[in-house]
Image (cartoon, rainbow, N blue to C red):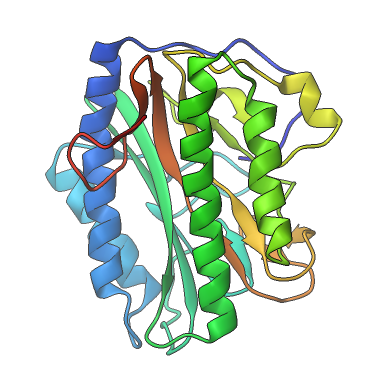
Length: 273
């Protein structure tokens, strides 16, 4: 979501509510796994989007992206962003090519509860630079999950996690995107709090303590070049200002007394302690 000013109180979830979110999370994970299999040279972005929407509808779930409000309502059930496109890329007739870096982001609501996740995929054989960007971005997310597990035990602050995420990306020579942030999630896709993947003075105003019951969509976006982005004339597609590739990954994460439950994992009982 776009970074905004102000702050509001996070909405804590019960274990029973988290279990309902896990059902949606499994479906999102299944959709991403399907896209991973389909994302080969010659596959049109519209094919991926149609397949995800059909999967959600067949399971009685609502695709949360389709019709999302904006200057133009969002037309797809997925955001499909290629190479220099950071997030919110529109599905359409474009066909994937060998060496593309594809970001797939999707979310659904099932039985009243939401889950949201994203992966970055290499199409065919990608360059070593793109593959390293993808790997480092995944490392940033995994680091965040481990830090959350540690932080919830001592009632730490999100800013402490964000600092370490940013340091890991920058130490690899990359830059964190700062115009977009993660978010709380529950009965709606975007709930308080805002979850920046980086640290600066302004984010201290929306900082929050890590406590059991929080459910967060954590989604680092990492650029190969400069951190700055711009939005194309379609009112949705966000691209890097220097035209260099970007990577984006995301999980919905539930904080519990036992650790971090990865709601959108493809593995059973994926709890990081």
